[in-house]
Image 1 (cartoon, one colour):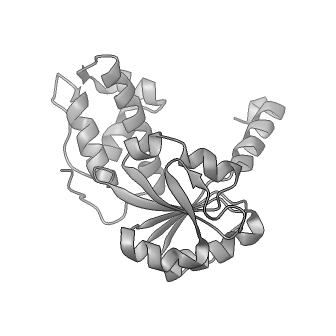
Image 2 (tube, rainbow, N blue to C red):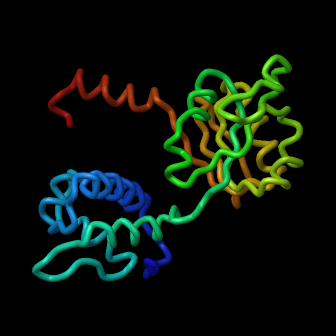
Image 3 (tube, rainbow, N blue to C red):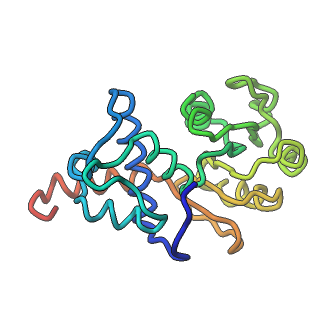
Length: 214
């Protein structure tokens, strides 16, 4: 298990670690067992010193003159990220996006097991999606008490995101992934990450319009 050697890990490092895992898993599927820092850095679109610096927050990795053992490095990074365990997750907002995520098998493969689906729409309550019955959002606290979920995913319309967040906080959720294009307010002890497709589309449109500013 990777041992964190610093209390403060830059957010950019965490994001790069996730990229490293993705690249390493692809390499493993292709049959690569050992890789040196230079080709790994090239595949991750960073420089080798950046990889060594990011990994140094968690200990010493790699063998001098050999490189990194892919399987071991994946295990170390997933341990550092805390994704070497199951995270029980609930989803609030069973619209088109919510249904797509519920049917996305990669969540479970990555250790994020969606164990509950919630909505306030009476026409959706009772519907079954990917083996889960859609339950009234007002029952979140009760259901989370039963299934031990720690993470909540919000896929509601923007005007309902704060209400969904309130229900999740009251139910004892520790972290929220918010797909709704709306900022939410939560207590300091609750972690929030935002996924807004338009932010990325805006960045793409800017880079296409102004190619020399990249």
